[in-house]
Amino acid sequence: MARAMLEYTKTVLKKVSFDAVLFCKEVQKAVQRLLPYEIEELKIFIHSLVQQNPELNQCLIYLKP
Image (cartoon, rainbow, N blue to C red; front, side, top):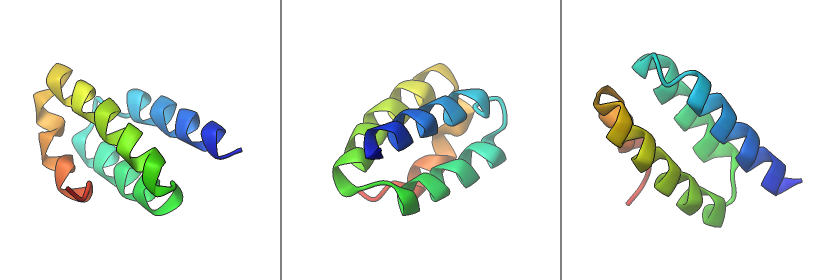
């Protein structure tokens, strides 16, 4: 079940990557919902999206180092 939530979150983030504000909101929700090891996977995924869309860079502050 948890794995499904991670995959769903990735799908949503891809779909809202056109808007940095929506993307940031979804990242915040994901950090609250996912387990710590899933958040680590999500960080890798988000970094790849940021490389494609540099305007999403501002949302990285929601991912704790």
